[in-house]
Image (cartoon, rainbow, N blue to C red):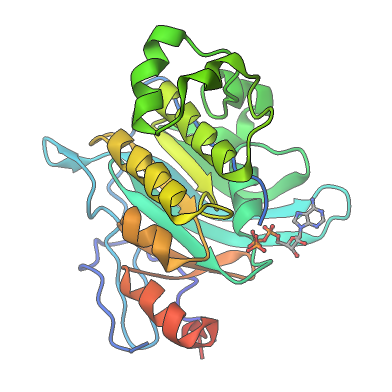
Amino acid sequence: MALLNRFNYTSPPPLPSFTKSPSTSTLFTFSTLPRNRRHNRKFPSFKLTATLAADTTAGSVSNGGQPKLVLEVKDLTAVISESGQKILNGVNLSIYEGQIHAIMGKNGSGKSTFAKVLVGHKDYEVTGGSVVFKGENLLEMEPEDRSLAGLFLSFQSPFYGYIMPKLEMVNIKADFLNRNVNEGFSGGEKKRNEILQLAVLGAELAILDEIDSGLDVDALRDVSKAVNALMTPTNSVLMITHYRRLLEFIKPTYIHIMDEGRISKTGDISIASILEKEGYKAMSST
Ligand SMILES: Nc1ncnc2c1ncn2[C@@H]1O[C@H](COP(=O)(O)OP(=O)(O)OP(=O)(O)O)[C@@H](O)[C@H]1O
């Protein structure tokens, strides 16, 4: 029985606690949507094996005591457009300003699909649920409109003066500017380049899909440093990873486990430690 795939939006739960020792392309979501933020104080709660309850407002910024909701995903279901195969089976997730959320999960559990659905990738069709991004109904927007609204942006033509300090921050040599984006870059350099996009564009919500894949330890440190340096009280990050080492560099407010197209568990960094020691069987909902 899945114990954690249900959200209770009725009352603010206590802080997370555990009672049990219990692939793809990289993309970014950039938000420059109008500031008609909704001050929504609905909090999800969860149950993990014995007891886990997560107040996902932890780590969020309080302006006048009111955490600001950046992304609210409710019961999101989606299929592959071509085949109709169901991939997302009711994703629920709330991200508040200043938070870093990590999604982990077995291969094929739907992590990247979730990320792509958020940016309106044409391969997927949303069949149910809702996604509110800073008060806007994301699902009503065409992918182009999401891009125009700042949801997805591909870095094309840098403004030299503006990005020089950013280049330094992510440890990229200035000759980068003389090359076309991603032309002649190694895998690790591409990752740094992608983080540079994030640096330049100042994403408010960045979705980082396996930014740790293919990076050597120095590059991982650089990339993580850049992400951390970009965090402000109003920035948020949703990162997908298989490995705890990234989470040691970029410390998540919450870790979610995706299983068969839904978030089945939520907790703190200890989830990653358990995963590393025991594998996903330790996350089994039985
Ligand atoms: N465009 C597509 N066409 C066909 N199948 C797809 C497509 N996109 C996703 N899938 C399938 O949907 C399932 C979920 O894929 P997804 O890439 O979201 O998983 P994931 O959790 O990111 O996996 P990994 O950890 O290996 O990156 C997989 O079985 C995958 O083969």
